[in-house]
Length: 321
Image 1 (spheres, rainbow, N blue to C red):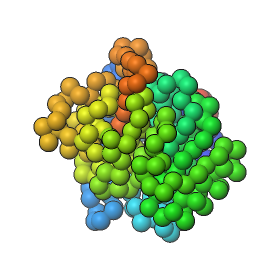
Image 2 (cartoon, one colour):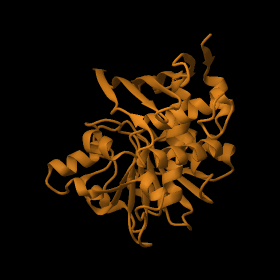
Image 3 (cartoon, rainbow, N blue to C red):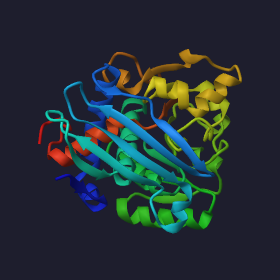
Image 4 (cartoon, helix red, strand yellow):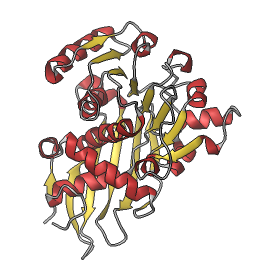
């Protein structure tokens, strides 16, 4: 029988410390060419709605499967997850489907874990002040994940609804025992930040390069396909640009593609994949004043390694059940 791992079981079983370790290993393996995957396929379903399919394998003879995911941006206002779907796992020995995992909850946790992995590799070691643009589910998971890799002393949050931003800050202050405060605008939010996470559904840039201090690290997360942008061309040009997947960014990274179309950068502006930095093959941050940018599009190996760990009970993500 096919096992079902629901949202509650994912939330109980996929801790941030474990997921950060899993994602780090998976992205190194990905950049070394040890995993197999296709570029994700996205079908637009209307304004703010998408359906995506993401197939892959953790190794030629390892666990494999696919994520089937819908993204409905309006779900946030209804108290629902914006990402809904399943990760279907197949057993590598027989090829049988063995498990279906709640994709929304895995996506929420592993996306933040991937940003934490990038932050640990690229942010200054003394980074303490975090800014989050957005106050939805990914804002909460990013805060939970980043406190695992840096001693965060304060978090400033901005969102289009100040009331919602204040409510979010009150809740997260109690949860993490770290002071959260709501900024009047995005520029004020990032003014003193060492680390910035953009986790919005913005279609046009909400963050300008002119507002970002030297030495800042950014995780640009909200846009997951070609089209909507969270940051402007100036910030893309100024930053040392690191991808989760080079191919994905060259094909689907909206901020990169817009700057490239404007003639401001070429493909070489993607200096590395995060897996290359983690493996020590490419230098990440080169100076205290350098701005580093991690473009997160999300990757199937992150989903598979997390889902397989839940199914197998192994925190290395690849052991047989």
